[in-house]
Length: 598
Image 1 (cartoon, helix red, strand yellow):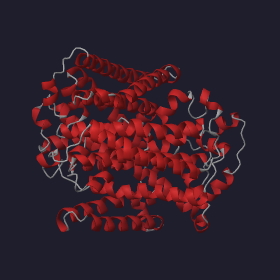
Image 2: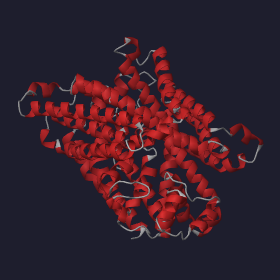
Image 3: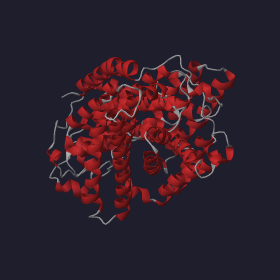
Image 4: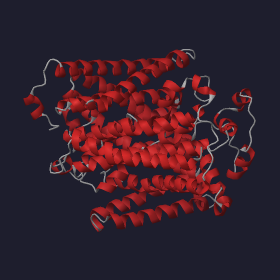
């Protein structure tokens, strides 16, 4: 198998899916109304509710949903061979992930930009609403803390990386001011300015590292954690048009740009996929992921095919800025397919390495020795990138080495291999950071909604004391977990909790379709809901009995059981309501007609 074949298959499948399946859902199932006034206009406040250009909003949405998952997940899942991961990235993104994102975005737009918590409470009931609120708040804090750890580890003691990532902040602020006041809606001009300065900041990074400025850009892990949490707070407080949206839009050029360059590199080099289609570890006992291919390949790939975190973005920042309902298709369905393409590129980069070298990077030397394998190109690869890459688990280094290996086969890039490797590591940090800033703002929205029941003014999106307090609270919560280091022990919980959130969101999506009076189409969310719920609950159970309990980690056991029980409550409550609506006729024609979904 050659990498080029996978690139062609992925591009073809996604193009056809967007043109036919995505368009079918948009026209026949959800029936977008382009003449309907969206919340961005109806509730416009220049702060959270801001009508935003379709492509700028696509950039924000893609940057917000595309975190570590599509980069790291497929790399780790390559342990099972290239075929299981490739199939799930193709099938899952088309039939589950993109549908999940589009239905939830539609539901939130029709609910004035409300969160998945508020929509569930109104459409399913109070029980599911409370359970969803607790589950989502737990999951978002775990997610933000886990993702932040990756960024902290990438940027501490790295003046080059810190400079380039930090430079995106003033560049984005200037872009926001430019499009708001200097040249309103001049997206093209702002893009040229922003991308030019972004390229300059990337090029200047290595030189900054050897100047007197480097000492002011070198921070310890603890210091970097405080800086990152402070940035999250600022991004959650400032108007979306000033920092968050232009920075995410700018980052999208780097994200998609690097992946497009990798695709071009694959076309030019046409690397051979060295990993077999299926390895012996599909039956379990793997050195990276100890479980079997089912359910663990689905949990490991996560965001590359479907992610519950996407439902928070689709019912968080994006629905408050969308100008026209018809834009939901490219922004939601399209962005998920773009993320799937990123995941496939990451899989190709990882599987282009010789299997022995792949495992030598992703496990400790002690574990690798027990595998009975011998490295082949690893010494050359280490020399190529300028550092010893053996025993560097987690997926990030493997992706960096794999991408550098492909780029180095292009003659005029070979002497830049060390630079390319460090650039890819930086790119991964920037990739993840855009999820953190959007996620923190979404966490603020959720806290405001939940806090309204305790103190009503907290629910007022224009009340500054509430905005500042809830932004500080969510930033402090995940920042504290990163600072103390405790979150590193519950990273495995992120995979299962994130996918359980996807199942919860798909259950809500099924409710949306039923209440729209189109139960004949409920299969588009019901089938992926059943699969995700079954797979993820089983994976969560296995994590408890085979991983957490044997290690005596009761914190993970308690958190896992809590999230499992909350998910089961929501699932049972939803199924009971569906039965009542469909079999007992409790959902009248008048109720369907009066629904916000019609």
